[in-house]
Image (cartoon, rainbow, N blue to C red; front, side):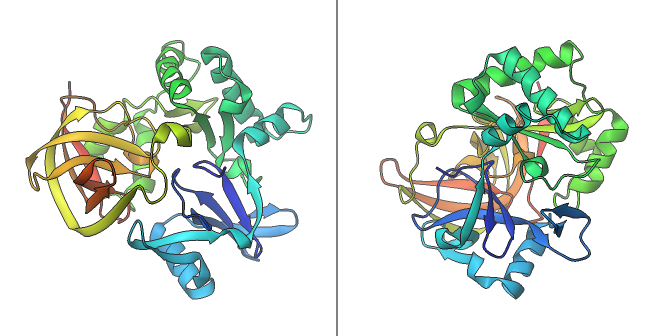
Length: 331
């Protein structure tokens, strides 16, 4: 099964990162991340690559060169980047990559640090190897000397235990929080897609437990439920995008805010009162707020028809560069 955190290589040697846990039967929702480019600054198996980050640039690239990877999905009712299964040449699994690194004697400094961090968390939490892996650029061997360390934890119980353990690891100084200089650097990078002030950015990011520094390298940990724990199969819900809106809301339940995809159950204080939840498939919107805190958010209003639950409305963050979520009141 192909899920969030996996990467896909296509027959054209494009490399996509998989998004979410719900996919159409004949294709995988995934976004192009690395593309062959003779002037690229990364090399893998004799081919030069460059990284595309901005969502708009990814879509423009595919629209111009590989339009068969753009798909108007009848369930999500929006244009998605997807990889039809017939175009998949290789699937990269984070847990397989970790096992490979464990058995290798020729790791570079980035790989060594990624392995050390993974083993530190594995031992601290008591994880099995199949529940932890290395994703991101290291997964597909396209990392550079200054690349981040991207880990993934699979399973709801394993994810919650990892989240609790991260607080201890910070207290023990096994990992470090971002200082203001690092936060400013992260802000400069993120603000290209999320238009919030540095003050608002710091208020959110400084208390996150799934990111920080390990041996002076940036790390990010993605917690992902197993598909059977996520509780949604393709077609169980039909999503209809309506318009972009802004709301002010109180967080009623944030227990799934640490997972990717993330979700917050809310009570709208200002704006469309039909909205019951804020959701996102992007890691930057994880850990933004806790229960009883008040947030302001801008995103896509969606009507959801659930076979079991009926009709409800949600605010989806991350499909536009103008989307944001800021903390107005913290505990």
